[in-house]
Length: 150
Image 1 (spheres, helix red, strand yellow):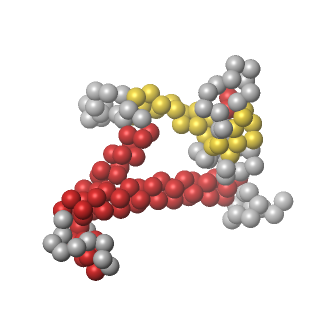
Image 2: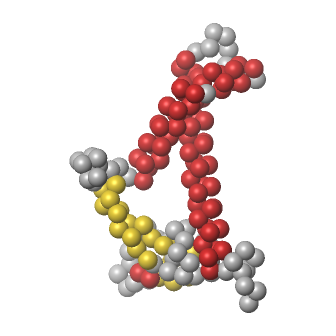
Image 3: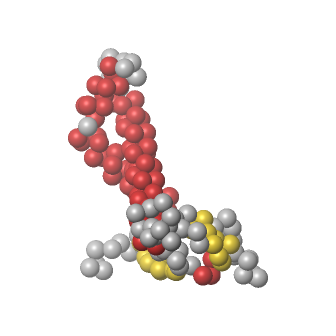
């Protein structure tokens, strides 16, 4: 399997709530404070504590940064949309006055970029919300299906 991965490998770490396992962690500080005062809190459950208490999973990926991952997803989706839905989107945009006849491939491409970017952003936000919901259910946060009423 390792022969499939490209030559460039970026070391990264994923952080998870020690209580519910959610990856939805808020940590206001980007840098580490020497005295250990690095607050963090979970968006899925009531846990609040220090960053050092988070569960950490190291991993490697072939991208330079998190932004590169999102850009790659966006490019992939744009290519899918261009092959399967460009005519449909073009017709829609033409009907509602966002494109003129003759249709400019450059203008349609710009719309396809924007559509792909918005869809990827929504996919990431939806996945984050789903992870938070699953974590809440797992630990029984009040008001969720996992709540045991106590």
